[in-house]
Length: 389
Image (cartoon, helix red, strand yellow):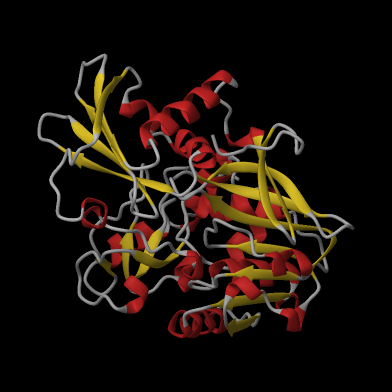
C-alpha cells in the first residue's frame, strides 16, 4: 500500500492494520469490499484503546465527522448495553453487543486460516461485519452466524443486505452451535467463553479449527486455536490476548459484597497477616489468567482511595470466603485479611509464585484440550496439566 498511515478513513485504518501485521494481504481485498461503516449503527460508544471501558456516545446525526473517525479507528464500538434494556445517551452498566476492534477481527481471521470452499459457523453475529467479511471471502452460502438476541440478529441481517451479502443469520443459543448446517470446517466465536461447548467440536470436521476467546472467572482472556482430532478431542494453544463480552449463557451470577459479610463490618473476624507480594503485581492480563487457572471459583474488585492506594478484594463464588490486600504506594509490605474456609490470598500468592517459577509464561505457552468430558488447560505440553493450587 502507498496510502499514508495518517490518512483518515478506511485507507488510513487499512494502512495501520497492515503495518501492525493484523491485516494480511489475503484479507485486504475483502476489507476494501466490506466497509466497516456499513455495519456500524448511528449511535456508538467508542472503546478506550488502553482498556475495556467506553468513551461517551458518538451520534452520527450530531457529529458525522466524529462518528466516521470512530468507525475507522482501531477500537471496539459498543452498540448495545444491558441486553438492550439501556436507553439514553449515557453509559449503561454492562456492554452486551459491539462491533469488535478491527485488529482483533483480522487477527482472529488469520488464526482461522480459511481456505476456499470452507464452511464456517460463527457464534455471535453482533453487527454482522465479521460474518460479512467471511461471506465475501468464502461465499454467503458457506457462512452461518448464530445470534442469541433477536434484535441484534435483525440488525445484522439489515447490514448484510446493505452490503449485498446473504449469509444465514439465525437466532438461537450459541452453545448448541447449528447442527442444521454442520459439518463445518471452521468455527469462530466473537464472544468469550469460560468453557468451550462440546457441540462446537462435534460439528467440526476432523482437522478443522475452532477459534474462540477463552477466559477464567478470575480474569484474563486470550484467543484459543483448537484443532479437532479423529478421536473427538480438540486441542491447541492460545495465540493472543483478548477482551470480549461473555457468552450470555455463561455469565456468572456473582454474589455481592453484602452476601459475603451478612451485615458484619470488616474485618469481620478475619485473620490478619502481611505479604510482600504487591497487589499491583497481579493485575496484568496474563497474571490474572494464570491466577484464574490455579484459583478457580474466585473473582476480584478494587476499592480505590484518593492517594493512589486501594484495597484489592477477592471473593469466592459460593459467598463463603473473602480476602483483602491493601496497596499503598511506596510500601514493601501490605496488610492482608482473610476469612472463610478458603484462604484466597494464600491461594493467589501460590498461583503467582507458580507462574513466576515457570518463567512468567505468556499466553502463547498455555493451551487447552476439550473433549466430551470437559476441558483441561495446560502449560507448554498437553501432558502438563494445570491443576488448582
